[in-house]
Structures are given as structure tokens and as C-alpha cells.
Length: 132
Image 1 (spheres, rainbow, N blue to C red):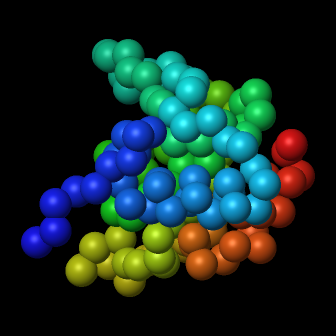
Image 2 (cartoon, one colour; image 1 turned 180 degrees about the vertical axis):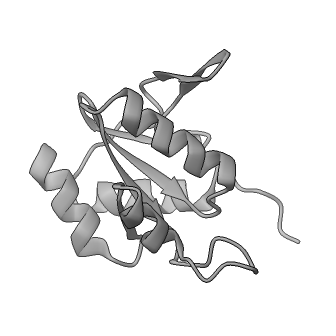
Image 3 (spheres, helix red, strand yellow; image 1 turned 90 degrees about the horizontal axis):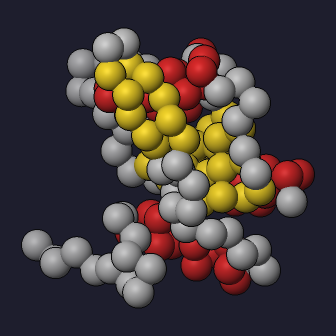
């Protein structure tokens, strides 16, 4: 097993690091984990730090593994902050679990979330260009 490799920016995942490199290579400068967004899970308060800031209230969140807690958080943020736009970039479009036939992209679409895979470069480039 390889040790985790973090760059100076201290990315939490390899996908975050690859996304930053890819966007930088294309001429985009997207700050990493610059903003925090408050949201409420009934009876408690939390904050969410999006991976990349495109512009004010426009973000990109990269996900290799998208857990049930991550999906719940995404829906709560969308409901509580309808003015905020987040594009979820998945490493690949895998099933939610071994027992599920639903994929990440299908679940995101069903729940009104913007999403694509990292390999779908035209989609995330278009999203960034649309908001810059």
C-alpha cells in the first residue's frame, strides 16, 4: 500500500490534487478550500468547506467515495442555500453500494445536484467557464 501523498496545498485526496493540476494546466486558478458554508442537521450546526471556489457562491466538490453522510449533506446544503451552486466531480460513476443499482450520477440527478465525472472534462470546464 502506497503512503498518502500530499502536496504543499495539503489536498485530502488524489482526485483533489489531480483536479487542481488539470484546472491550472487549463489556465484556471481556483482557490482550494477557501470558503465555509454553514448548514444545519436538525438539532446541530455544521460547516462545509467546498474543495474549490470558482466564484462567490459557485464551487466544485471532488469525490472519490460519496458516502451516505456526504449525500445527506449535499441535499441539506442545496435546500438551505438555494443560491449556492456546487458541481460534484466524481472520480468515476460507481454504484452507491454493492447492494444498490443506483450510480453516483443517477442519484445526483434524481436529487437535483449538478454532477459529472473527472473524465468528463468538457462538463467541468464548461461549468467553470460559465461562472467565471
